[in-house]
Structures are given as structure tokens and as C-alpha cells.
Image (cartoon, rainbow, N blue to C red):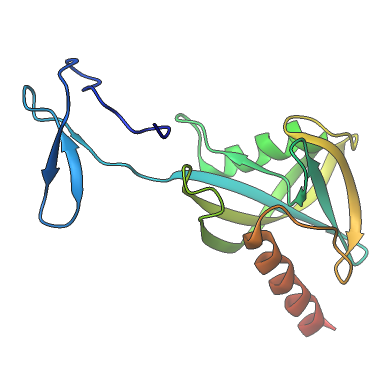
Length: 166
């Protein structure tokens, strides 16, 4: 069973039944009518650029990424981006523009929509935390093996933006 793959109604506990709503096959509760819409979660990431390098974090399970995390129920995407960045890097940031919005299909059981911001460090001490075991700056032209293909896209986008600014 995949995460979020309900068998019983979370409202009344009745077994869910297959239901085609005209678009997709879903699950519906025959007792209370609740329909299970399996939607992606929202992730946020902050790209911190300093002197032609980008800050990346090595994930506990391997691979490197732009520091990222999930939006909690009661926070804005901007609050989540600042919180996650602080948790994973020890650095406080201000956010500027949105660099990219991408669908992440790297884990078929956990579809996410990611929002990447450009950030500027405003305080704190660089240290790994959360899902990261190491954080350090890498040249744009020589990043380590990246965990997520969407980060490769964002780094290429940043390379072109920095090239245009010269």
C-alpha cells in the first residue's frame, strides 16, 4: 500500500469503493460520500548563491540537493522556505524572486510540486541539519551528483541568468 492510499474513509470509517468521476478512477465512501482526491504536497527550496557558487546539501540517503522541505499546513510557502532553509543549513535568509515551479516525479509514491526561491543569507552559522548531513558551496559548473533532476534544471537556469548578468 502506498502512502495516502486509503482503504477506509477517514471521516466515518466505512470501506472505500472504486468510483469513476468522469475523469479518473477514485475512491469514494458509500456511507458519507467523501471522495479521496490524491493530490501532491508542496515543497520549497532556496538557492543561495555566493561568489559564483551555490549552496548544496548532502542528503542522509545520498545525493546532493538545493536545501528544501515541505510546507506545513499553517504556513505560507515563503515562511516554509525560510524555516526549512534555517533547519537544514543553520542560515537565515531573505527571499527574492521565484526561480522555478516544477512538478517532482522522482518518487512515484510522493508526488510534489516544488517552488524554488533565490535567497540571500542574513545571519546564522552554516551547519547541516534536518535531512542533510553536509552543506557546502559548489561552483555552478561542477556540482556533485544531484538527488533530484529538478535541481539540475534550476542550476542550469541560474547558470543562464548569471551569464546574462555579465
